[in-house]
Image (cartoon, rainbow, N blue to C red; front, top):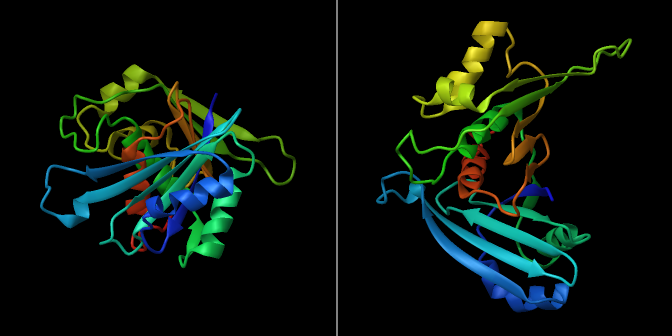
Length: 241
């Protein structure tokens, strides 16, 4: 089944592991957790390239939830939290607990058009440290635009697809294939400016769908690449659409 991930920014990185006992009592279940130290890019000497990721797994009788916090203390917005699962209200309960019990500012994030395309560049990456442009996964990609006319409502939606092979052909030599190659190709051949049009979603067959409010994944997981891109583009200097 598809899993919808919502995203929140935090004004500080929270070591949520020290609250595990409290959260287990709050949710009435055992929580499994994982901690990962991640490096983006080849330079491991730069603090800006190092990230900490904490992943919590909540197992209920007939449902499950996941919470992921990823952060870097050197950033102005040092962390984001993502949540998904099929347990009723677990996300709301967790966010309400954060707001009431921990001295942290937390706010929900939206995905603007610029960020959608930057996240698309991260979808195809196999690993956050990967520098080999040939080692990437390509997908049939669908762009959907909401173009509802205000008077007669005759025009409601526009969409187009780019095959997996075409995406690879267009983007194989670009570090950021969608933003540097595929989107410019669309403009050059159709006159459609994807950034100016009301882009509502980008879908990658059998992988994920990026919308204005969430990311929907087929597996119950989300790539670290996406989370780090989301975090970096949430910074004040990068957050304008």
